[in-house]
Image (tube, rainbow, N blue to C red; front, side):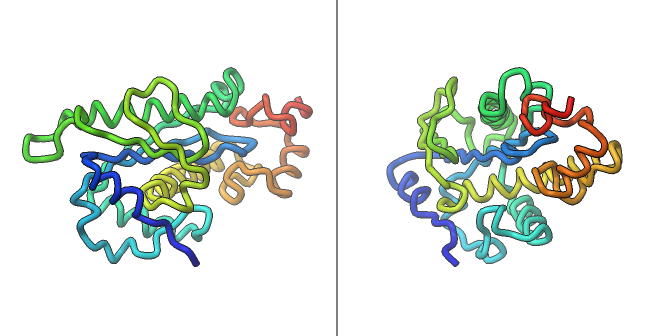
Length: 223
């Protein structure tokens, strides 16, 4: 199995960049629940160390739930700085899923900028230095002042983006498990809002819930 590489990050740091922000989203294709974004912040020193507990880390879609949790906990234990943001179904229905994900990406990066200013002087400096944003996908994020590099299938190719994908996925799965208790019968704890056969059957049987995306055709036709 080919693991995500750290080549891009190391090259950027060798080129004089002081920080890398990696951004990924989860829940784009779901019929229910929010789209969640994670922005992770790395400095050069992180990539100069050996992190044995992160060796097999890869795209969240290639991991089992318990493996994602182990890596999520390991990233937190290694003091990786990150911010999570999300857009609820009502926003998705109003501005569409792509714009909702991009809105959440901008907010996550902005939150990192604000949070970085709260760290003491001996910690990393505020994000006023040379920063590169690595974005999963083929398009840049509008409204961001930092330089950006979009990478198709970045969550599979780039280590820092894979980290963001795991943190976002674990967070969103927990949200959907809570929704399963609030809206029983749909099986959110199992399919997490994705369009599985179980989800489609329950959706037809029960009708859309308040957290379904009414702008999505498979949901809208049942209204």
